[in-house]
Image (cartoon, rainbow, N blue to C red; front, top):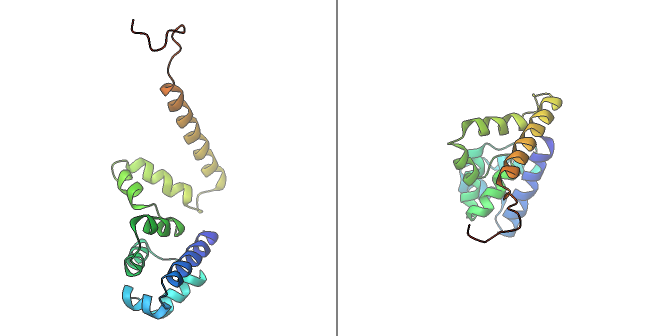
Length: 138
């Protein structure tokens, strides 16, 4: 998870500076302690999902920009998260794939199984060859 926190911190700082907002001003708007924003930007702290959403709102981010911030912090974008609420198994698999407590070989195995499932589904979607009479009504 190390590089994710750095990525989030860099993105947060870039977005904040592009909007010409100081760390303390952002902290105040999002109702956080000033040092929290500083620690997030340096990568010393990882934000919660709620913290990312509060910071996004305080910066006036578009939903696309908020999703980029969530992704940089290691969270699923909101549209994907809402899609997954109907598919708890997929959400669980994604959590496990990101969980470094799960041994790497298990995670690699899960990725391979997922690739195979996707491949089979794509194969099932391919139109069957019909003796060259495509587009002609029988």
